[in-house]
Amino acid sequence: MPRPCATVVTVLPTFTSTVSALAYSIVRARCADASPLADDRYNRVVRYVLAQHAGMPDYLRLPFAALTVVFGVTAVGLTGRTFHALPHERRWRVVEAWRRLPVSFARDLLRFYEGLVVFAWFTIEHGGELA
Amino acid sequence: MAASWPDAIVEPSGDVRCDVAVIGSGPGGAVTACTLAEAGRDVVLLEEGPLLELDATPAFSAQEMRAKYRNGGITVALGSPGVNYAEGRCVGGGSEVNSGLYHRTPPEVLERWRRGFALEHSSSDDMAPHFAACEQDVSVSTLPGPAPAASLRLHEGAARLGWSSMEVPRWYRYAPDGSGEGVKQSMTKTYVPRATGAGCRLLPDTRVARLGHDAGCWTLRCEPVRQGSGRRGFSVRARTVFVAAGAVQTPALLLRSGIRRNVGRSLHLHPTVKVVARFDDVVNAPGMGVPVHQVKEFAPHLSFGCSISAPPHLALAMTDHPERIAEVREQWPHLAVYYAMSDGGAGRVRTVPGFRDALVSFALDDADLTLLADGLAKLCRCLFAAGATVLYPSIRGCPPIRAEAELARLPALLPRDRTSLMTIHAFSTCPMGEEQSRTVADSFGRVHEAIGLHIADASLLCGPPGVNPQGSIMAFARRNALAFLDLA
Image (cartoon, rainbow over all chains, first blue to last red; front, side):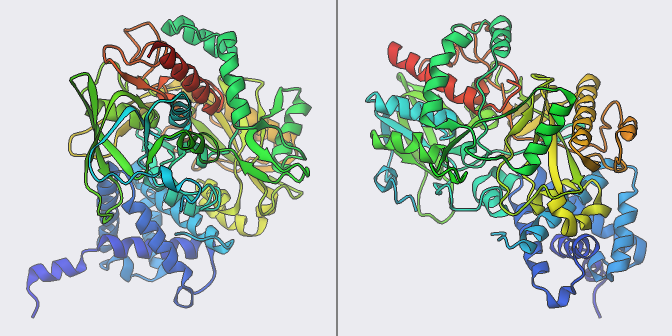
């Protein structure tokens, strides 16, 4: 039987899984009708977004990572499940709820990821390389 | 890599000695290193970024951002609104990644700097020989054939309104067949190989952590940038140092080195707001090329132009209208990105203990945001005159504008929490002049009360030039290097 603290840890979203799920959902909502399961382009976009985050100025990198994890925690609060464990439609409701928050940093976070994801996706769609 | 200049690359096994160390190989540093090396000085040119051929990555691509930009192109001046900015970080600096658009510093701007900063010997007549020499060195020229359609549209819209618009020349060597093909004359194609050809030693992938001064000599504490390269930290010793690391990194290095008076306190940018325009007919195509027209009717405070408009850039510019991004997939040949650029606002560059990257902040007051809003409205008017049918300004929640009559919907003051601003032009963090209360260096880039320490980049410009700044940077670098040779 798992210890209580271990249970808490397993429902907490990680930065990487949240970014990955968010990137998948942004592509599906904004860019593509292809199925993620049959399409390696999704993973290439995720790798690009993670690499770009890793290269950010140090005073931005940690706050963005923390805010991303907080975003993932919002999903736990709203749905009882981590963001990356939700189906796309429910993830997108979390995104829209976050977008409606009356604080600009919430919208800025989503715009940051949306910008990176669509730039990467359209690069791939038009024959470009990401790395 | 670097097959053209293999002998110039230095892999230091210990400390390095030279007459002159130049930190940064962008337009300011490259011109300085070349001028001094060709005059017979023993020069070492240090660059934090890698040495990559101009065509190592496709121009304006995601790969280029990763390889040649600082922080992968993700840098922001904090503020409300924040301003995204980009810095080149490779041998050749910004010249490797920019559009290559060339302007001389406008005479009225030089006059403003003379009056405000007691900047000596800097009139248009004083500067003319330096502009002319640089223009020849980098082959400043106009297009041999027609400009891209999206660029021409802006020009046509301005003409219909009776506004001043011009084709901006580029530093570009065009093929003689009139095809428009050619090679951008970036620093790795011009001044850097000339410098190394004259004996300058080049140290890429080398970060200068701080400067120290003792016994009449400067010591540069250097760190190799690439992890696992096997290189260790080392020092460069030089009697003279030119810092040319750009308007953010130059003040950051001086601050880390304990040189603080007026340093980093007067950052200026060209804050820029974008709009995506849709036309009924085709204005965009694969490999469209660099748009070259700019509307100068309201210069120097406002300028309008057309941006790189490849589908990834269009999609990025549409992120303030996320529900419309899908439109880019089908409609991109009918879409192009345009910009309104202003000269307002002021900011700072700071260093924070424990952080490697410089902290940049920038403030725009209501008058600055009103000026930008006015610029956006005028740009939109110009685009409707050019035949645009729908406009998408970079303001979150702003509905698409479908007719000139709807321009009244645009805010008179850009909303701080919903406007996306960017720039690729930063300057003025170490202004030059004889007015010591507000400058870091004298009229020729010599840092006050720091013998043998010079600045040679956009940091020196006393304020926003209102035009693409590389021409100003190169001309002042040449002028100041020649002044150093006369005095040295």
